[in-house]
Length: 547
Image (tube, rainbow, N blue to C red; front, side, top):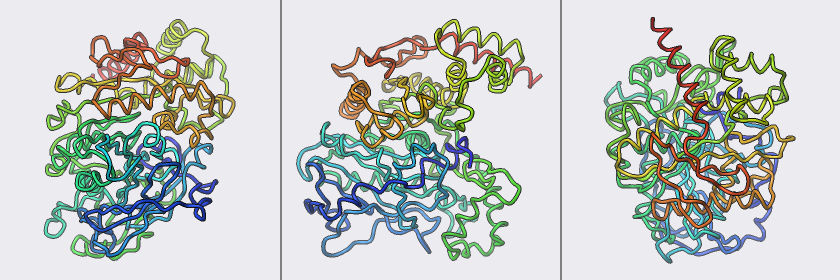
């Protein structure tokens, strides 16, 4: 699988080269308190003063008759259920991330009984702490909430919040559009996103018993998780279930048109040799048979977000998602929700094979720039000269990776989403840029996609395999994690460890820059000239193609 398929298809999913530390510590696990939930009592464990509850069901199994259907509440149980181990990983194809990230993935067993969440809290039943709900990356196709870099342990221990990560249906299991067939399938649309709504409903019902405040819930996510945050902001069923939103290195401006989703469904049925009047057979197929549909046919390219040439993601169905997420404007239903968003300096490094991260000469730089912007020799020369003038001291590969990121959908979509949310004037928007360059792999990873996650979670120990660690890195983690927690607590990320962080507007474009040195700094429109030059080139290309 190509790393470039990560946002849409496959992702932080790895090979599990290291054993999860909890597996090593099972014999020494300290049982924690028992908490009563709406479905029954659960008992967690205590890890360095933090109470941890893993694999907590927020919905019933989605196997069999529940497959492709909206989520249901979990079945009740008697007695006390131990919440010591990760729950089921949503069915998916794994792989595609840089090898340094493989040890962060516990590679838990896949199951359609995957509607589970994980909770880290300083103290059950005590206090009303901000609740931070994490939606993992991997597009709408892969990943889980169990990666070590997603652990909310330090947010709970050092910052006094309740942190939660969520598993939910993905790819064909979460986004096969069947509603147009009507009957029992009338609500079989966007069930993966409805899972996330169900998780937020469970949190509203139960989180006070874990020491959290159901009236102060922040949703946050990175990459595909940021797309899930964007989508929740436009879903009527999610209104009122969260109060702040953070989208890191990702956005969702538009959904899949219904007509396109229907064509994808027709392709799936053809591959499974199922006729439209035999849809019940979809629920009789094995989990593996459906996973195999995601694999491209022999000789075909992997294709889009579903894999196998299939495109799975939120559908503009007119009901669960009545309008595009952020197009042409920000969604009115979340107008009052404060928003924080941003990108890393070299997002694209994540997707490049190592051979393309080594030093390049001037001719190769020009060739790559031409390919990135789909421009002429003159276009490439002008852009290279501009970047060299405004960013002196950077070598050729660094200049290209930054230019390619500036020209990528990451930067463009995140900027557009921030502009539209700010134009709404309903709640403040805060923009950041992450500039920390990792020393790992002789510095070639730079500030790649996913690099900021361990900093946000104040969890460099788990992320050091690809971030590296040092007192300087920890200072950046301190600045970022405190800002994210301050935002979750009040809707404003300011704290005494950073300069005054002004809300974003489309004119001045104030942006908090983390990791360019040990001190954060507020910069108005970083890369202003480069941004406008790339925008003009894109717009000129669009006009030329239309003529």
